[in-house]
Length: 297
Ligand SMILES: Nc1ncnc2c1ncn2[C@@H]1O[C@H](COP(=O)(O)OP(=O)(O)OP(=O)(O)O)[C@@H](O)[C@H]1O
Ligand SMILES: Cc1ncc(C[n+]2csc(CCO)c2C)c(N)n1
Image (cartoon, rainbow, N blue to C red; front, top):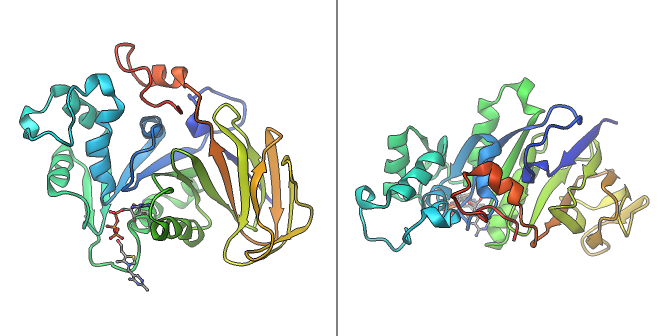
């Protein structure tokens, strides 16, 4: 069985390694408070899409992640766009989404107008009330990515967890709907990705930014047999199911975890809160700007 390797190296500065070609990233921003490392993910992504109200978050909150450039509160500002501080407009210019797609019931008209003016593609999918905005955005990425490039593409979803439970479950369902795509759901606290049973999985732990708390959860059906290495409570041909054992509050003890299962699992790992990624911030912006714009604080 083929081995799929997973790594959260998107949270680290881009240092060339010998680990083969690095993935190419697409970023989807959802309608939740922006995770603090959003500017870093934005810089790494080759395609940036806002799901409906996610565009409001980029418009309102991204300037706030650059406090020294943000001389007044944008959300409470009664000023027109023309009279807003030049710095805020500069941040908005630098962080322009490539696409805004959704059923357009949350994104504000002024936000659509602002980005449309900058050249953002606006895709109104309001006729579809059966799929979520995240689903629509992942479908857009799938349709616009040649098949040969799909295996090297990793879709990062910012703001996918820690909000309304129906939305969270809907977001997890997108992992299952697009199970052949690599999709990582992210919040400030943790990530979730799917480990399809069609592959063996190797997870390389970036211990400076993630761990030690982790979990392995069967999704869709009980998992008759799962075997792992690298965890404090490893599984050995162990059955997991809701109503029985599932692996929560587990701990990574190695830098490399392996997982093999007869049915699909979710992998989740916590993010470290206290890491100050000075190097990352320095890479992202000139010295005169805030040093803690994108830190995992
Ligand atoms: N509280 C939340 N928790 C998790 N994900 C969210 C949350 N709010 C929004 N999202 C995600 O962001 C996407 C866009 O959000 P938006 O609020 O624009 O959707 P919506 O279709 O208007 O939602 P609804 O009509 O159910 O309130 C959603 O499809 C969902 O994936
Ligand atoms: C059985 C069923 N439940 C809920 C919805 C509602 N819904 C699901 S996705 C979506 C779009 C959100 O942007 C909406 C309104 C539906 N259509 N079918």
